[in-house]
Image 1 (cartoon, one colour):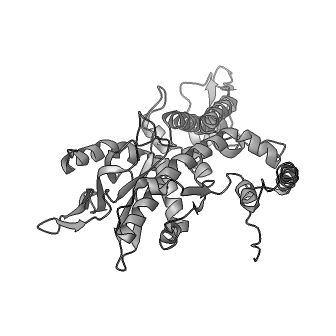
Image 2 (tube, rainbow, N blue to C red):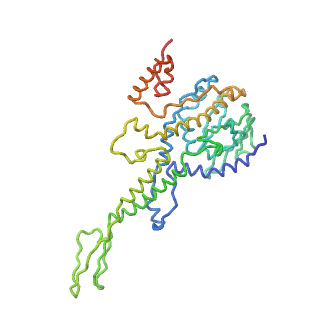
Image 3 (cartoon, helix red, strand yellow):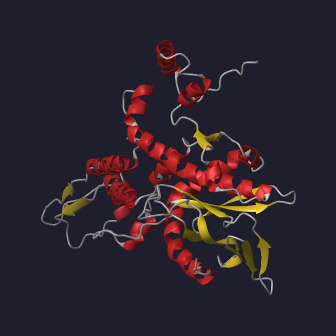
Amino acid sequence: MEKSGIDYLRKKLNHHKLRVDARYRYYAMQYFDPSLGITIPPDLYRRFRAILGWTSKSVDSLANRLVFREFTNDDFLVNDIFKLNNPDIFFDSAVLSALIGSCCFVYISPDENGQPRLQVIEANNATGVIDPTTGLLTEGYAVLERDEHDQPLIEAYFLPDTTIYLDRRLDEPYEIENPTGHPLLVPVIHLSDSKRPFGRSRITRAGIYWQQYAQRAMVRSEITAEFYSFPQKYVVGTSQEADALDTWRATISSMLEFTKDEDGDVPKLGQFTTSTMTPFIDQLKMAAAGFAGETGLTMDDLGFVSDNPASVEAIRASHENLRLAGRKAQRSLGAGLLNVAYLSACLRDGVQYRRTQFVNTQPKWEPLFEADANTLTLIGDGAIKLNQAIPGYINGETIRDLTGIKGAELDG
């Protein structure tokens, strides 16, 4: 197969980098919306800058529930590889990066003992040409290190039989042999399909719109609050020869004195009708409802707490869309992690295993929702009845998949 080349992959990465960087800025709550209304001056808009973390909440609410457990039917002992690579940090980092940038990449390299070393690279620093059948890359490119100006310092070009490193501090690139038969850069993709083979971000355009809508409403409400706190007043009928009023004194003073003029006329005081904050609160709630519907969250998740606290079952029912999104993410991310395990085993053993030899190895995830006492009771009753109908149908492993609780191991 003809290769696209490193120049093509550089251009491809630069094309997608801006979009991924914007998603990371939204997640870090550092993105400033430059859009303005027709009545607020730009300097006033910048002074009352609003910050919301709804997009961060949409990512974390799903990422915190995607807890990887292990690989079952581990014929090639791939679980040992992940145990040597800080699994608590590695899996969380891979899942979070994939949810933000639509995918992440795992760079596999041998350590000094020949064991696979796994490093998560964000989507704004790596790309490649994907094989839609296996989910592996036919060639890959990654920026391993950048300088203080965000320019590539160390680059790597991944091929099936070799990995080429380009270091700006060195005169010539150097190569390291790859015995696996596949590029040692593996994509872990969130929600991939035929149209978007590298997946879709959890931070969607609709979610960004609703957050920006809410931010604009908050800016308008904060500016209006200044006039709400100090209503505008007016005086009519003053003499043209009278001294000008000190506006700040007129605002904070508890007593003002106005004398009659030569004709005996008295000035009349008045106050403009103050703006109410109710429309802005309604706008904020509408934005929260739209964002919650887009991301599978509830109004409670976004800070609009209901008066009556919900039970665990009610919370689970209200998060049905989030549960479905989590199931889909587990299937999509699990395929990528299995590819990481496959190539890691090939690199460790120095053998080009066939991909079909890993079909029985399956990724296992913890339940998306932790079981409470009521759920445990219901599952226990159901397990007893099912085992009475079909002896041995429910075992300890099945119960752990449903509850996430690991029972005591029995001897013998």
